[in-house]
Length: 475
Image (cartoon, rainbow, N blue to C red):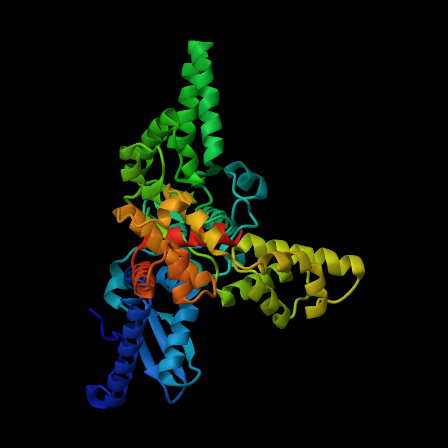
């Protein structure tokens, strides 16, 4: 239920101004627009309890949050989203003024918020945690592709108590999962300098566990002590971040040990953050009890960056590399390179090397020369054969089965996905697609495309599969 503004002030003789009441209707419209345009969980967490005083004639909307902590979080994570909504509904540029809601009774009884730490931990202290200090929220671009993951990460990093535990971030290669995970750790440590934080890869965890287990056949006393130290290292943490958790697959001993670590942390108010290149329920060779724990918190995905986000990433990476890149140049690159953040970072470094070596400015012409091989590779047209082979392999079928008359449910599903991708990634007509997929009529092709397109919007697992398949097909 949308709340009315708690900060309306009475006019003369205690009568509320009719104009202010109408302005409150405007804020209600803003909240409704935000509710419709964002996932339900984001709306509930970030927007639902915001109130406002609206003065459209003066071009100002004062937004009130329930606490200074909430104010910082919402302004940082979604200030631009709110501003765009307000400006669109107002039909003009509106200034947003952020304030903490006045609540005398609450202020009198509520404990004072902890003061911001004067200084964060030193570089040597950060190094012990495994965190990379240069991977922060400040140099991470937010866009539609990572919107919910970004917002959830800020909440986890800023909350004094565990939230979304565990936070499970998944997405394809090079989309920024690792950066987001380190950003959580760095912000958490900045806010809690005395906290015990550890950020490692799943492979590191596996190697440490194996090193301990090898002692079991060498020296029982040394093994017992090593295992005690290993358990203490993990179970004494306030925040544990593990990258690429899919590497635990088919590692029974490691999974059993991590399950115990999980049980010693999460039920006792300690936060865990995990990343994976696979949707959690698709993790192969995982214990069912561990899978149930991994999916009990919040699962968020990072998708390939959209055009505007790619442009912002290029401009940010260029600025941090000391490269003066005009926006029109970034737009040219963003139109050509669409797969992931890592590809964009590589392009910036290649342009940097080329322009410095040849001592030339960054222009559209010099960028086309610097990235000619990359652009050429990215412009290779997608073929139906590549789509069919990739989809068939992904779902464990042969291409001949994909094009057969079989109506087995799983095969039909894979066939529909392949037809949808062929429609999206090639310029083939409906009759051509039908012919290339076993002589099917155009009505069958239309049905497959509409079905997958509709399900893509509501099925996270399908959405993820499509992103992975698109990356494989284009690579």
